[in-house]
Image (tube, rainbow, N blue to C red; front, side, top):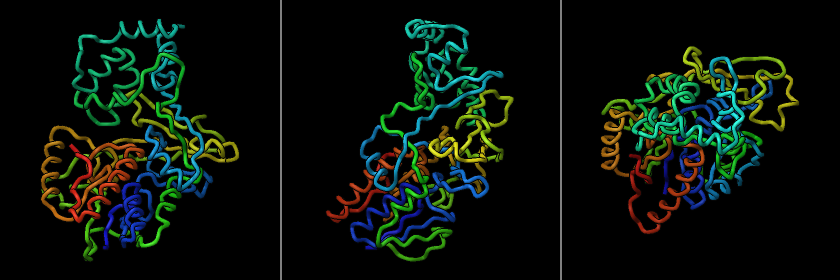
Length: 382
């Protein structure tokens, strides 16, 4: 059987390799000139720095299967994401931990004292937070919320935090020790050769015909089934309208030596137009000291226009309603499965993308072995 996979990011690459290993012919398409989607990395010619072209990506997961899978295709070296934040002219550490609390309130509290102190700041009248702001106020109180999250969130999403779901903040830890690791997951690292090299190795399999700079709409060939990881609304030619996304603009900063001394600094104040500055050589600390030049990028978030690269699904009420209509439309469209961040219109970290693609491979095997049709979605995107 011959299949088509649209999109050469992690979702598409994993599906393509799996089908190939099962003896099927696969046409893998991507309209960009490179593989790995928004995880694309490449050496910067001017500096020698491994640049994350669509913004920083740090691999972290609690899923051993996803970790073992990706480690087959490249060496992952230890990397801990330690984020700094500027608020009202002062530098702090994130996520909010005991050092942040003591710095901000100019105290020297112990873990127990800080826990009690923050509990006194938190709004305990909010039993079930309905939005981002209520979640923040119920966790950390108004001072820390205003200092680190209110302005940054408005810049990142272009919305008042009261319009955003509480789940966005639930992903961030609050610690009463001095642990400044941004993530809690047991498996964390950075690929020594970059993410594009990982995806390239995944695609080193027979039966895969990779065509870059090629749009799915340009293909007139017939396939047993299509696995579509592009935007679901685009597949249906936006007939129900366009789903909303945020996109990013990057302003390059070239300098000698070390620009900011760390990988990521968030700028929390609304008056600062960018959300953060990332210095990419620090994402590869094993080689950073040997590099004579450095490159950093200021990030600006805005609403995506039709020709922009989509990053973050907004998923407000009108987007959810439109998504449900597209889901119904997809369910009535034979021989096409939608998966990945764009295909299911969900914010997904890399590890979740990989985990879901591997689970999809399991279900593909069962369906093909039993002669059953493949589903439109391998996971409920609502």
